[in-house]
Image 1 (spheres, helix red, strand yellow):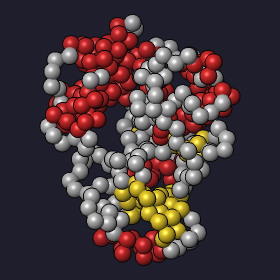
Image 2 (cartoon, helix red, strand yellow; image 1 turned 120 degrees about the horizontal axis):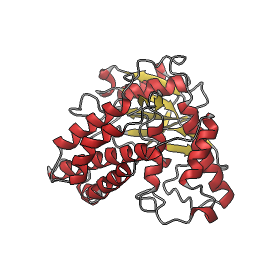
Image 3 (tube, helix red, strand yellow; image 1 turned 30 degrees about the horizontal axis):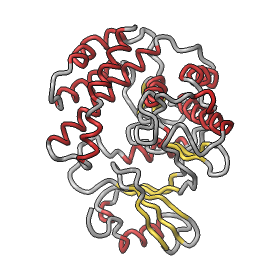
Length: 341
Protein backbone atom coordinates (compact mmCIF):
# COMPACT_ATOMS: atom_id res chain seq x y z
CA UNK A 1 0.00 0.00 0.00
CA UNK A 2 2.01 2.95 -1.29
CA UNK A 3 1.54 6.71 -0.99
CA UNK A 4 -1.34 7.88 1.18
CA UNK A 5 -3.53 4.82 1.93
CA UNK A 6 -6.29 7.10 3.23
CA UNK A 7 -6.23 9.58 0.35
CA UNK A 8 -6.93 12.35 2.82
CA UNK A 9 -7.63 15.00 0.19
CA UNK A 10 -10.83 13.08 -0.64
CA UNK A 11 -11.47 11.33 2.66
CA UNK A 12 -11.50 14.31 5.02
CA UNK A 13 -14.19 16.34 3.22
CA UNK A 14 -16.22 13.14 2.87
CA UNK A 15 -16.04 12.42 6.62
CA UNK A 16 -16.91 16.02 7.47
CA UNK A 17 -20.10 15.58 5.42
CA UNK A 18 -21.03 12.12 6.65
CA UNK A 19 -19.82 11.77 10.26
CA UNK A 20 -21.52 14.10 12.70
CA UNK A 21 -19.05 16.29 14.59
CA UNK A 22 -16.00 15.26 12.56
CA UNK A 23 -13.52 18.13 12.80
CA UNK A 24 -9.95 19.05 11.86
CA UNK A 25 -7.60 16.04 11.63
CA UNK A 26 -4.51 16.27 13.83
CA UNK A 27 -2.91 12.84 13.57
CA UNK A 28 -3.13 9.49 11.77
CA UNK A 29 -1.67 6.26 13.13
CA UNK A 30 -1.76 2.79 11.54
CA UNK A 31 -2.51 0.02 14.01
CA UNK A 32 -0.20 -3.02 14.02
CA UNK A 33 -3.28 -5.24 14.40
CA UNK A 34 -5.83 -5.66 11.64
CA UNK A 35 -3.40 -6.66 8.90
CA UNK A 36 -6.16 -8.37 6.91
CA UNK A 37 -8.04 -5.08 6.71
CA UNK A 38 -5.73 -2.08 7.30
CA UNK A 39 -6.88 -0.13 10.35
CA UNK A 40 -6.04 3.45 11.34
CA UNK A 41 -6.58 5.81 14.27
CA UNK A 42 -7.79 9.29 13.31
CA UNK A 43 -7.32 11.96 15.99
CA UNK A 44 -9.24 15.21 15.52
CA UNK A 45 -9.76 18.37 17.57
CA UNK A 46 -12.82 16.92 19.29
CA UNK A 47 -12.67 13.10 19.15
CA UNK A 48 -10.78 10.03 17.98
CA UNK A 49 -12.06 7.55 15.40
CA UNK A 50 -11.00 4.25 13.88
CA UNK A 51 -11.22 3.67 10.15
CA UNK A 52 -11.04 0.16 8.73
CA UNK A 53 -10.64 -0.35 4.99
CA UNK A 54 -10.23 -3.22 2.58
CA UNK A 55 -6.72 -3.69 1.21
CA UNK A 56 -5.84 -2.68 -2.32
CA UNK A 57 -5.48 -5.17 -5.15
CA UNK A 58 -7.39 -8.32 -6.19
CA UNK A 59 -9.25 -9.95 -3.29
CA UNK A 60 -10.76 -13.37 -2.69
CA UNK A 61 -14.53 -13.23 -3.03
CA UNK A 62 -15.35 -14.02 0.62
CA UNK A 63 -12.32 -12.38 2.24
CA UNK A 64 -11.99 -8.96 3.93
CA UNK A 65 -15.72 -8.85 4.69
CA UNK A 66 -15.83 -5.45 6.36
CA UNK A 67 -19.48 -5.05 5.35
CA UNK A 68 -20.32 -8.02 7.59
CA UNK A 69 -18.14 -6.59 10.35
CA UNK A 70 -20.00 -3.31 10.22
CA UNK A 71 -23.43 -4.90 10.09
CA UNK A 72 -22.96 -7.25 13.04
CA UNK A 73 -21.38 -4.61 15.29
CA UNK A 74 -24.05 -2.08 14.40
CA UNK A 75 -26.85 -4.38 15.59
CA UNK A 76 -24.90 -5.61 18.64
CA UNK A 77 -24.24 -2.11 19.95
CA UNK A 78 -27.63 -1.99 21.70
CA UNK A 79 -27.26 -5.46 23.22
CA UNK A 80 -25.21 -6.64 26.24
CA UNK A 81 -22.37 -7.56 23.84
CA UNK A 82 -19.67 -4.86 24.13
CA UNK A 83 -18.67 -3.49 20.70
CA UNK A 84 -17.50 -0.13 19.35
CA UNK A 85 -20.17 2.23 18.01
CA UNK A 86 -20.39 2.15 14.22
CA UNK A 87 -20.62 5.60 12.61
CA UNK A 88 -20.58 5.26 8.83
CA UNK A 89 -20.06 2.70 6.05
CA UNK A 90 -18.84 3.79 2.63
CA UNK A 91 -19.13 1.71 -0.54
CA UNK A 92 -18.37 4.68 -2.79
CA UNK A 93 -15.03 3.60 -4.22
CA UNK A 94 -14.30 7.04 -5.63
CA UNK A 95 -13.13 8.00 -2.11
CA UNK A 96 -10.49 5.37 -1.24
CA UNK A 97 -10.81 2.96 -4.14
CA UNK A 98 -12.19 0.34 -1.73
CA UNK A 99 -14.99 0.02 0.82
CA UNK A 100 -14.30 1.31 4.34
CA UNK A 101 -16.08 2.12 7.57
CA UNK A 102 -15.51 4.43 10.50
CA UNK A 103 -16.29 3.75 14.15
CA UNK A 104 -15.73 5.32 17.52
CA UNK A 105 -12.30 4.77 19.08
CA UNK A 106 -12.42 2.65 22.23
CA UNK A 107 -9.58 3.89 24.43
CA UNK A 108 -8.46 0.84 26.35
CA UNK A 109 -5.81 -1.85 26.58
CA UNK A 110 -5.38 -5.06 24.59
CA UNK A 111 -3.73 -7.93 26.47
CA UNK A 112 -1.65 -10.37 24.43
CA UNK A 113 -0.39 -12.74 27.14
CA UNK A 114 -3.27 -14.68 28.79
CA UNK A 115 -1.16 -15.08 31.95
CA UNK A 116 -1.74 -11.32 32.41
CA UNK A 117 1.60 -10.71 34.18
CA UNK A 118 0.88 -7.02 34.76
CA UNK A 119 -2.26 -7.67 36.82
CA UNK A 120 -2.96 -8.76 40.38
CA UNK A 121 -4.38 -12.20 41.13
CA UNK A 122 -7.80 -10.72 41.84
CA UNK A 123 -7.86 -8.73 38.63
CA UNK A 124 -6.77 -11.75 36.56
CA UNK A 125 -9.77 -13.67 37.86
CA UNK A 126 -12.04 -10.75 36.96
CA UNK A 127 -10.59 -10.45 33.44
CA UNK A 128 -11.32 -14.10 32.72
CA UNK A 129 -14.82 -13.69 34.07
CA UNK A 130 -15.27 -10.67 31.80
CA UNK A 131 -14.11 -12.75 28.82
CA UNK A 132 -16.75 -15.29 29.77
CA UNK A 133 -19.40 -12.60 30.19
CA UNK A 134 -18.71 -11.25 26.71
CA UNK A 135 -18.75 -14.69 25.09
CA UNK A 136 -21.93 -15.84 26.82
CA UNK A 137 -23.66 -12.52 26.03
CA UNK A 138 -22.82 -13.01 22.35
CA UNK A 139 -24.28 -16.51 22.34
CA UNK A 140 -27.48 -15.32 24.04
CA UNK A 141 -28.27 -12.74 21.35
CA UNK A 142 -31.63 -13.43 19.70
CA UNK A 143 -30.66 -13.62 16.02
CA UNK A 144 -34.21 -13.02 14.83
CA UNK A 145 -34.75 -10.03 17.11
CA UNK A 146 -31.62 -8.24 15.83
CA UNK A 147 -32.34 -9.07 12.19
CA UNK A 148 -29.48 -11.48 11.52
CA UNK A 149 -31.34 -14.64 10.50
CA UNK A 150 -29.70 -14.37 7.07
CA UNK A 151 -26.19 -13.80 8.47
CA UNK A 152 -25.17 -17.44 7.99
CA UNK A 153 -26.49 -20.77 6.77
CA UNK A 154 -28.94 -22.66 8.97
CA UNK A 155 -28.20 -26.14 10.34
CA UNK A 156 -25.39 -28.70 9.87
CA UNK A 157 -22.76 -26.23 11.09
CA UNK A 158 -20.01 -28.76 11.87
CA UNK A 159 -20.70 -30.86 8.79
CA UNK A 160 -20.37 -27.76 6.59
CA UNK A 161 -17.30 -26.50 8.44
CA UNK A 162 -15.46 -29.83 8.34
CA UNK A 163 -16.21 -30.22 4.62
CA UNK A 164 -15.10 -26.66 3.88
CA UNK A 165 -11.83 -26.88 5.80
CA UNK A 166 -11.05 -30.35 4.45
CA UNK A 167 -11.28 -28.96 0.90
CA UNK A 168 -9.03 -26.05 1.83
CA UNK A 169 -6.54 -28.40 3.48
CA UNK A 170 -6.39 -30.70 0.46
CA UNK A 171 -5.88 -27.73 -1.85
CA UNK A 172 -2.85 -26.64 0.19
CA UNK A 173 -1.48 -30.10 1.15
CA UNK A 174 2.30 -30.32 0.85
CA UNK A 175 2.92 -33.65 2.59
CA UNK A 176 0.89 -36.59 3.83
CA UNK A 177 -0.18 -36.33 7.46
CA UNK A 178 -1.98 -39.55 8.39
CA UNK A 179 -3.91 -38.00 11.27
CA UNK A 180 -5.40 -35.38 8.95
CA UNK A 181 -6.59 -38.02 6.53
CA UNK A 182 -8.23 -39.91 9.41
CA UNK A 183 -9.79 -36.74 10.78
CA UNK A 184 -11.37 -35.81 7.45
CA UNK A 185 -12.90 -39.27 7.24
CA UNK A 186 -13.92 -39.89 10.86
CA UNK A 187 -14.65 -36.51 12.46
CA UNK A 188 -18.00 -36.03 10.65
CA UNK A 189 -19.14 -39.33 12.17
CA UNK A 190 -18.46 -37.97 15.67
CA UNK A 191 -20.67 -34.88 15.45
CA UNK A 192 -22.89 -34.88 18.57
CA UNK A 193 -26.56 -35.62 17.94
CA UNK A 194 -27.58 -32.52 19.88
CA UNK A 195 -25.77 -29.92 17.81
CA UNK A 196 -28.81 -27.99 16.61
CA UNK A 197 -28.15 -24.86 18.66
CA UNK A 198 -27.70 -21.79 16.47
CA UNK A 199 -26.29 -18.48 17.62
CA UNK A 200 -24.01 -15.73 16.50
CA UNK A 201 -20.40 -16.91 16.56
CA UNK A 202 -17.41 -14.61 16.45
CA UNK A 203 -15.13 -17.10 14.72
CA UNK A 204 -11.88 -15.70 16.13
CA UNK A 205 -12.74 -15.14 19.78
CA UNK A 206 -9.47 -14.68 21.67
CA UNK A 207 -7.87 -12.36 24.20
CA UNK A 208 -6.13 -10.05 21.72
CA UNK A 209 -9.46 -9.36 19.99
CA UNK A 210 -10.78 -7.68 23.14
CA UNK A 211 -10.30 -4.19 24.55
CA UNK A 212 -10.30 -3.73 28.33
CA UNK A 213 -10.60 -0.66 30.52
CA UNK A 214 -7.19 0.72 31.48
CA UNK A 215 -8.17 1.24 35.12
CA UNK A 216 -10.30 -1.78 35.98
CA UNK A 217 -10.80 -5.34 34.72
CA UNK A 218 -13.81 -4.51 32.55
CA UNK A 219 -14.36 -5.64 28.97
CA UNK A 220 -15.11 -2.58 26.82
CA UNK A 221 -15.26 -4.07 23.33
CA UNK A 222 -14.90 -7.24 21.27
CA UNK A 223 -13.31 -6.46 17.91
CA UNK A 224 -12.33 -8.10 14.58
CA UNK A 225 -15.64 -9.59 13.45
CA UNK A 226 -14.50 -10.37 9.91
CA UNK A 227 -15.35 -14.10 9.99
CA UNK A 228 -18.38 -13.88 12.29
CA UNK A 229 -21.43 -15.84 11.20
CA UNK A 230 -24.24 -17.90 12.66
CA UNK A 231 -23.37 -21.36 13.86
CA UNK A 232 -22.91 -23.52 16.91
CA UNK A 233 -21.86 -21.49 19.98
CA UNK A 234 -19.56 -24.08 21.53
CA UNK A 235 -17.14 -23.67 18.60
CA UNK A 236 -16.23 -20.22 19.99
CA UNK A 237 -15.76 -21.59 23.50
CA UNK A 238 -13.65 -24.53 22.33
CA UNK A 239 -11.53 -22.24 20.16
CA UNK A 240 -10.61 -20.22 23.24
CA UNK A 241 -9.75 -23.36 25.24
CA UNK A 242 -7.66 -24.62 22.31
CA UNK A 243 -5.68 -21.36 22.33
CA UNK A 244 -4.75 -21.88 25.98
CA UNK A 245 -3.21 -25.27 25.17
CA UNK A 246 -0.51 -23.51 23.15
CA UNK A 247 2.88 -22.42 24.48
CA UNK A 248 2.77 -19.81 27.23
CA UNK A 249 3.51 -16.20 26.34
CA UNK A 250 2.23 -13.43 24.10
CA UNK A 251 3.51 -14.98 20.85
CA UNK A 252 1.53 -18.22 21.00
CA UNK A 253 -0.90 -16.67 23.50
CA UNK A 254 -1.22 -19.91 25.41
CA UNK A 255 -1.08 -21.09 29.00
CA UNK A 256 0.73 -24.40 28.58
CA UNK A 257 2.72 -25.23 31.72
CA UNK A 258 1.31 -22.26 33.64
CA UNK A 259 0.15 -23.07 37.19
CA UNK A 260 -3.12 -21.20 36.94
CA UNK A 261 -4.54 -21.47 40.46
CA UNK A 262 -1.95 -19.32 42.27
CA UNK A 263 -2.34 -16.69 39.52
CA UNK A 264 -6.11 -16.51 39.86
CA UNK A 265 -6.64 -17.95 36.37
CA UNK A 266 -9.44 -20.54 36.06
CA UNK A 267 -8.81 -24.05 34.81
CA UNK A 268 -10.48 -25.06 31.54
CA UNK A 269 -13.16 -26.90 33.52
CA UNK A 270 -13.81 -23.89 35.77
CA UNK A 271 -14.06 -21.58 32.77
CA UNK A 272 -16.51 -23.90 30.99
CA UNK A 273 -18.56 -24.21 34.18
CA UNK A 274 -18.82 -20.42 34.54
CA UNK A 275 -19.82 -20.13 30.88
CA UNK A 276 -22.63 -22.60 31.48
CA UNK A 277 -23.71 -20.64 34.56
CA UNK A 278 -23.76 -17.37 32.63
CA UNK A 279 -25.98 -18.98 29.98
CA UNK A 280 -27.99 -21.12 32.42
CA UNK A 281 -27.29 -24.31 30.46
CA UNK A 282 -26.20 -27.81 31.44
CA UNK A 283 -22.50 -28.70 31.42
CA UNK A 284 -21.43 -29.45 27.85
CA UNK A 285 -21.25 -33.13 26.97
CA UNK A 286 -18.63 -34.47 24.55
CA UNK A 287 -16.64 -31.25 24.76
CA UNK A 288 -13.68 -33.13 23.27
CA UNK A 289 -15.49 -33.17 19.92
CA UNK A 290 -15.63 -29.39 19.81
CA UNK A 291 -11.99 -29.16 20.88
CA UNK A 292 -10.95 -31.74 18.26
CA UNK A 293 -12.82 -29.76 15.61
CA UNK A 294 -10.99 -26.55 16.59
CA UNK A 295 -7.57 -28.24 16.45
CA UNK A 296 -8.47 -29.74 13.06
CA UNK A 297 -9.60 -26.35 11.75
CA UNK A 298 -6.44 -24.66 13.01
CA UNK A 299 -4.28 -27.32 11.35
CA UNK A 300 -6.05 -26.56 8.08
CA UNK A 301 -5.49 -22.82 8.54
CA UNK A 302 -1.78 -23.21 9.29
CA UNK A 303 -1.35 -25.60 6.37
CA UNK A 304 -2.66 -22.84 4.14
CA UNK A 305 -0.06 -20.49 5.64
CA UNK A 306 2.63 -23.04 4.84
CA UNK A 307 1.49 -23.38 1.24
CA UNK A 308 1.55 -19.62 0.76
CA UNK A 309 5.02 -19.40 2.34
CA UNK A 310 6.38 -22.11 0.03
CA UNK A 311 4.79 -20.33 -2.92
CA UNK A 312 6.50 -17.08 -1.93
CA UNK A 313 3.28 -15.13 -1.45
CA UNK A 314 3.04 -14.98 2.36
CA UNK A 315 2.90 -11.49 3.87
CA UNK A 316 5.55 -12.51 6.42
CA UNK A 317 7.46 -15.58 5.13
CA UNK A 318 9.74 -15.88 8.18
CA UNK A 319 6.80 -15.96 10.57
CA UNK A 320 4.90 -18.30 8.25
CA UNK A 321 7.76 -20.81 8.26
CA UNK A 322 7.86 -20.76 12.08
CA UNK A 323 4.12 -21.32 12.34
CA UNK A 324 4.05 -24.24 9.92
CA UNK A 325 6.13 -26.34 12.28
CA UNK A 326 3.03 -26.88 14.40
CA UNK A 327 0.82 -28.47 11.72
CA UNK A 328 1.67 -32.12 12.57
CA UNK A 329 1.31 -31.35 16.29
CA UNK A 330 -2.10 -29.76 15.78
CA UNK A 331 -3.18 -32.74 13.69
CA UNK A 332 -1.92 -35.20 16.32
CA UNK A 333 -3.80 -33.39 19.10
CA UNK A 334 -7.01 -33.27 17.06
CA UNK A 335 -6.72 -36.99 16.34
CA UNK A 336 -6.02 -37.78 20.00
CA UNK A 337 -9.15 -35.91 21.12
CA UNK A 338 -11.29 -37.54 18.43
CA UNK A 339 -10.12 -41.04 19.36
CA UNK A 340 -11.08 -40.40 22.99
CA UNK A 341 -14.72 -39.79 22.05
